[in-house]
Length: 431
Ligand SMILES: *Cc1c(COP(=O)(O)O)cnc(C)c1O
Figure 1 (cartoon, rainbow, N blue to C red):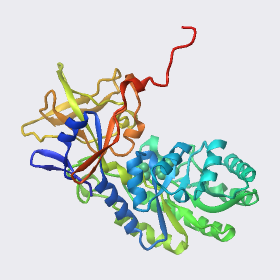
Figure 2: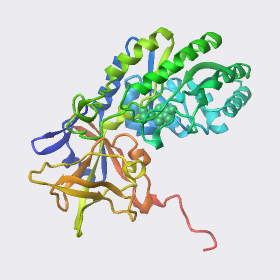
Figure 3: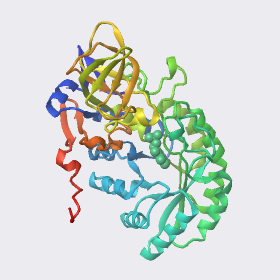
Figure 4: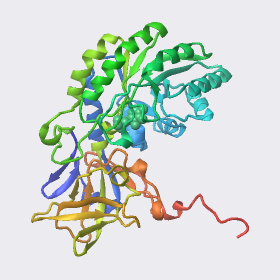
């Protein structure tokens, strides 16, 4: 489910008008729905009821403190990828003992910090990292709980920049080497082998790669659990969401595939995976990012100009690739809809931002109703990998973010004041 729908001609987030929010807080503006976050978490957690499970929200998809707080309040754990993300969890009232720490490049300082905070597990990506964790833990006289990330070499059939489970990419340790790595890790001081982890990619819209990976890894994790007393198996994140027709598909709200084929919902995901996972007798961790946050957020932007050239109708908006980089970076599709619904014919339009790059294009030849200067547009499904990937390129301040809860709305990130864009800079003393 998501909570964005037209009430009359106006697009609402829950019981709050996006138009009114844009007027009050300015644009570009990210708007998040607390009800959608809550519903997404509950539905996924609920579908996996037969398992001893822990959902660890992958906060790299959206690390706003208010989003973290919402999920922490529901009992979520967190998948963090830096000391900064762990510190954010604490700042938002999250529980470090429900945090797993992923990533291929953990520094000694990050390891020290995570050990002191008492995280649930390090998800380890290499043997040098295992040795480093052991060394740091020994110095601190702490036991480091670890899981090694297995690369199951299963093709997730997703975009090249977000596939992670084949030997072509930098993540994890090859399936064939894992048992030897565990045997060596078991001899390292101050290491507790707590689990096994995998993550095969992002935006998966079909349950089959998940099933293949679990099928392949299940016998391995069973052997490792017996030998090393593992407690958990993390099956990673990667559950995809709807980007096309995102608004129309408000309910059921998850991937319904081209014309309803290949439905991946929390229920179908659970129906396939629970029967394979339950017999393992282990705690199952999930690390969903996009699934929890993607359809819980939109980016609202104002039309600055309509520019007609010989061939094209350019709709120039005040949001840019620095606010939402996914179309430029991954060729991703975001549904774009007017905040005030329009009638009339659809016009093929290129929706572009003001940045001086041809890549600053949100959509090409997209049928849009006739819009004019000052109209508001909403980019749907922008809650994941949206604001977090923002930058100040072209000295554009970071956009504001608002969390909606029914009729209530709160600014959960102020628009960056312009002077803060260069606030860390100075001229050199000899100038
Ligand atoms: C990015 C990432 C996730 C979350 O991926 P989504 O596609 O957003 O669910 C989970 N686990 C790991 C290790 C990741 O790198």
